[in-house]
Image (tube, rainbow, N blue to C red; front, side):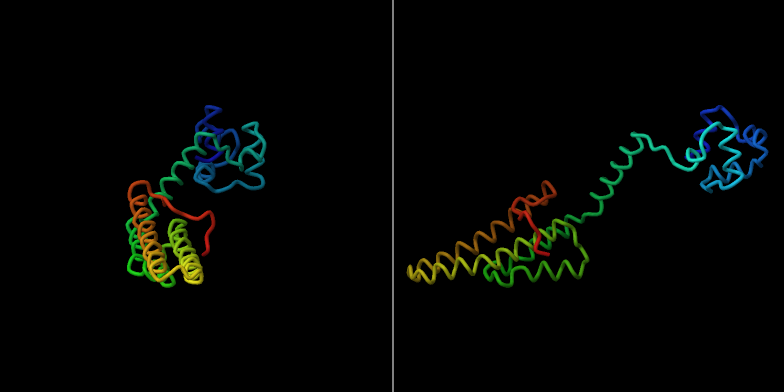
Length: 190
């Protein structure tokens, strides 16, 4: 609703009555109420007749109810734009390479680029897999250099793989149920 219409209705005037008092045509009043901003003589005349400042005719007065409604609409639109099925697929695409940490972030990264799904959740999934790709070889090398035996090296490999599989599956479950990740970093790598 235009400011002119709000002010006119507050003053209990019809478009015809306002046109008669101001000397402007009814069509001019209709155009301004439809969204055309008044200028010059028209603006000064309307402000004078309605006993308001010129600024009041140009600046919309947004009520708190309108702000709350707009925020709710934005939140609904934001939720609608997130494709949780695609996000779950992106997360699960790390599973085939869970045993090979250096490559486990490539499938989700490729899917993200091809589908153009760059939501914060997807970025967090890929960041987590990149972090695991960095930390897993470091842990493996530490165990290998400590020369604790081949059994401990093998157990470390199995543990790191199972930990990554668990993180992927648990995050997929949380995406499905709550629309967010269970395990995530406090920062994004990408």
